[in-house]
Image (tube, rainbow, N blue to C red; front, side, top):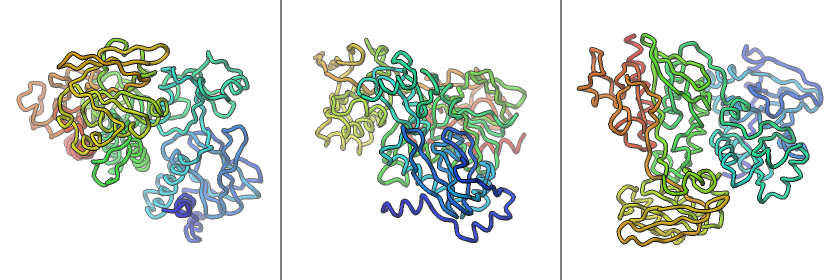
Length: 549
């Protein structure tokens, strides 16, 4: 696709019939703006959607040192991008140029238009996605600024949170960026204040928690219903699939996520064995598309809403959030997935976030370009990380405890690793200790057969050594296996916890109306495709359960 083709998709012009249809549409309101008046401004939340009837609207990037016009929209063209649907803050400002008439459409009305008028909705949605793609390609876009040291755990956490939640930002490194000192002085800040998040020269937050970031960026929005038809805990592939299918089939659906959409899959830079993507897709792209899709159908996804407990009120599930709020639902889907196991060797905890990482994305790769890195693990996650990093760094040491790379890794990944000259595979090897100063400098590994030790000079170790289920918040009513994964369906056949007269549905837990899908479920395949399948299948059983209530 040429740049001209991309621009045509990103900035389509509605035809006369589509524009005329807005005149009598109850969902849109005609408004007049004088030259220079702002329709919306960057950072504003829940902005309306605008279609230009006459005049023009300039889209302005005013987050940098000087305002810059990035596009001028004429009659028939419209504002907005992905944040319009996800509820995030506006990235640009919109300013009228000349006397201008525009149709204003609220976000709720926009979703209705997209679902009731699919042809127009497809044009708008394709434009939003193309504009976000163009935004990623803009080399001089600033957006939010994150100012902090590459050696700071807080800086890494903030950058990771923003990247995973699809919030564009620019990182200014205290160690390498010559503009940082001047910028801090202009903003009235010192290095001791970092990490800080700013918009232009306006300070937003000092060393914010994920919850504070989510509140400031309206990622964590007020809950809309007293009782939901379906509550989903976890926004990995299983949870997002359930959100799409549940909301599209008319269920009031809420998805409660601790950190960011995507789960473990969202941290993968290339998933090649997912049906329909022969050239692969990144976990971030998959999650981003799913979030837009779920929002399109009206699902509610308040990010940074950690669930700390579960209780029951008659037949309703009651979820307890960390801020004291509760969410009630007729049906519940547990899709919390699993967390990567910590390495737990000498020095490891000290360097987590400043040398030891449990994800290998562009955020982490930016820190170790041109250097040597260590990847620990023998499964697909470790293999995907190794392949991705091999194109970003000088050398990758893949440390595998077992004696055969093919034991737990897909053969296509294992073969690619063997054929990559910048990768050295160390079989029958384990990490013994780590050392460094402000950040990681050395990793000592040992051959578990010969006892031979070796020291690797490195500033980054990526750990993928299996996962533990996120089930510590579940009460005794939800039966788990010996490893902590949630039992479902046939595995509950002889369980005393199951008290209903019928047999449990395939994905139903020991509590009727509570389901589990994805990596958190005992016996699941631990693959993206199966998690998506289980999440969508769970909605079928939700409908069956609701019929019986």
